[in-house]
Amino acid sequence: MPNPQKTTYKIKDLAVSNKQNFNFRGIDHINYVDTSSIIENTINCTQRLNCNSDIIPSRAKKAVGKNTIIYSAVRPNLKHYGLIKKPLKNMVVSTGFITLDLMKEIDPAYFYYNLTQQKYTDFLHTVAINNASAYPAINPSDLENLEIDIFDSLQTQKDIGNFLSALDDKIELNNKINSEFEAMARALYDYWFVQFDFPDGKGRPYKSAGGAMVYSDILKRDIPAGWEVKTLAENNLAKILKPGITKFDGEKTYLATACIENDRITDCSNKITFDNREGRANMQPIANSVWFAKMKNTKKVLYFGDYSSERIAGLIISTGMLGLQCQNYALEYIWNLINNDVFEVLKNKLSHGATQEGVNNDDLAFIPVVVPSQEILEQYSALVKPIYQQKYLNEREAEHLATLRDFLLPMLMNGQVCVAN
Image (cartoon, rainbow, N blue to C red; front, side, top):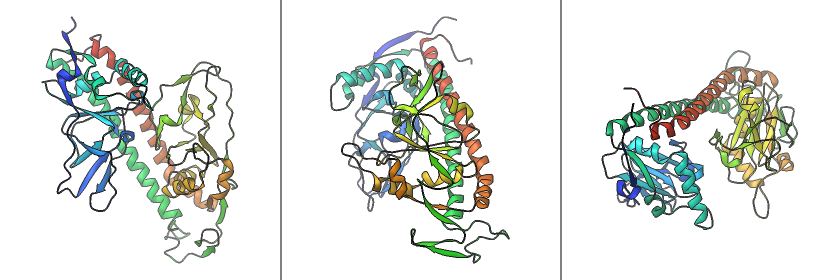
C-alpha cells in the first residue's frame, strides 16, 4: 500500500498560540492545571479553587477550549503537555504553557500526537537549552516556527488519532481506577489509625465502642492501650536503607527525583549501566520498601511490594530519595503514613540546608510514629494488600501501553504502518 501524501507546514500556519487570558468576572471558582500537573496527556491533579476565598496563583491566567493543546515552555524533555478534549467548567491553565488551537480542518488528536513525537521533543529541548535563559525554555515563536509533516487525508488523520487516543484512554482509565484504590486504602488508614476505629475483638469500631485509650505525652492525644509511640528512625516496623547498589549487567532505568510526580513514575527513559551511572544513581529498591523525596516542598513517594519483582529488577533510585525497608505486615501502614499530608508538613518543618533544603536520616528521629499491635497491622495488610497488588498490575499495564504507543507513534506518522479500517 503506498504511503498517504503529506504536506509540510509551520505550526503557525495550522494553529494559533497564546490564547487570551481567562475572564474571571462573575466566576466563583476555577479548575486550575499547573505545568507539573500533566505528563504526556495525563492530568494528575486539577485544583478546584474558590475565587472568593482561595489564593489564586498569579500564573493561573490562560483560558482553554475544546481541543486546546497545552505545551509547557520549560524543559520540553519532561513532556508536560496534553490535549484538552473536553475542558472542565472554568478551566484555567498556567502561563507556563504555550496553548495551541487549530485553525485548519485537522484531526486534533492526530495533530497532538504528531507534535509530541520524540524527534520534535528533542529538537525543542535543544532550542530551549540554546536559548540560554535561567532554565531551559522555549518561546512561543520557537513552537510556532516548528515545521511538521501532516497527512493530507483527514480520514488517515482520524484513524491514527483514534487509535492512539484509545491507548491513552485506557492508560487514563487505569490511572483513575488506581486513584480510587488509593483513596479507599487511605480512608481505611484514617479510620483505623487516625480515628482508631479498627475492628475490636467483637468486630466493633474500637474507640467508638469504648476501647481502652491511654494518653501519649509525645502526641498530646489518646492512643489505643498497648500501642506505642516510636520515631521513624527507631521502631520495629521499618529501618532506613543505606546507599549502595549491587553490580549488574546490561541496562537499568535510573529514577531521578524529577522522574517521579507524587506517587507515579512518569519517566522511564533514562537508561544506565553500572559503569556509566552518575553518582546519585546509588539506591537499590527492594521488596517491602517505601521511599520519599528528601527535598522540602517536594512530594515524591514510591512503594514496592513483594509482588513488584519485575519493577524492582529494572530500577535504580536517586540518593535524593530516602528508603525504608518495612516488615511485610507493615508495608501498607508505613506507606499510608508517608503518603500523607501530615508527614509532608513534618518533613518540611525539619528541612534544612544552605542551598537546597531537605531532610536527612538523622531528622527521622524527630518524626513520631504510632506503632500498633502486630495483630492489627496484619489485619490491615490482609485487607488492603490486594488493593495495592491490583493497583501495581494496573500501573504495569499502563506502562506497557505507553511503551507500545511510543513505539508505534513514529511509524504511524511516517507511514510505515497504518491503522486497518
